Image (cartoon, rainbow, N blue to C red):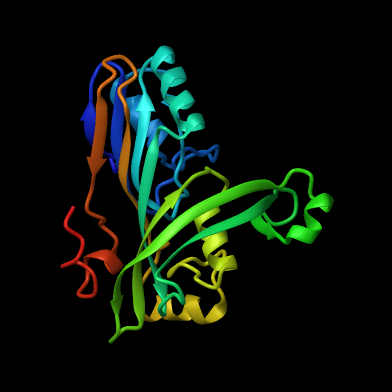
Length: 235
């Protein structure tokens, strides 16, 4: 099983999904985290609370009962289920910390991509949804011209971090879908095959025991475990 179980009890599972493995897929014969966990549990039920893009690694929480799934989904909706991410971009951001607010539209029929809609065009895209994230610079590796950022999202939109960061001129290293050509080439030079994004922290209230649960992981991705940022990442 490619998915690593970090924590398990009667109500839930917390797992580390590796980059390159889909959270859930309808493609026949393709492995995914949900299928792996259902096989592990020998159960047809698994409550999916949230997802990570296939090229992104990180922590996910799943419910083992419908009651816990409802409770965790409510926490996610109300902002009580918190996730934090590490991300790597080329260059150094103009501001060391900031908030990005955009309206995102998912172009499902044509490209399968999410698009940041300009404020003056929102009326043309009634399905566009508000997306908010905060970022801060953790470390700048001057010799490689790369920056390690910590990102927190207030909303959970499709490809949100990747789209908003690209729209702000801070495309993530290794993002073949949303990064411009120069960033894609830089990722290839460094041998980065997946998006340089990791959900390294997740916290929520246990759906039954009501105590706070807090989990951290150390990213496995090459860009995080290399010489540039590993001494800084302590989880």
